[in-house]
Image (cartoon, rainbow, N blue to C red):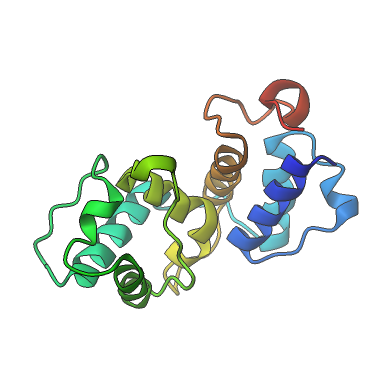
Length: 175
């Protein structure tokens, strides 16, 4: 298991609130195998579900409006994250954001030269806080697990273009 794989497995454990044994992790060769393993652990159904990125955007926008004390704050995916906290310190803004959304320990993406955008934060919500996007009456579905697995790969490797049957090392480029 390379460092990318370790980071990815830890990401999935955090995202889904599960534990993946080392013996299970070393057997995972494709995203589909990870989806199957995690779905089994969560008892995920094949039922239709919400779009996780759409839900993440709405949660983010609501949290940003509350943190900025501006209920009419316009939030677009292309907006720079630093522009949202104008009028308060970044630390204060993200603390208020966490309180407003109920997403504990949310840390905005850190990208060099302050180029992080709302899109990056929305993707981070799906990658690391997918469990927090579920409402109390909602249960895990294979579709949600698939989104979490794929966003985990995006977060670790940075690639979006791969199939569920691509191999992590040979096709996706993990080491």
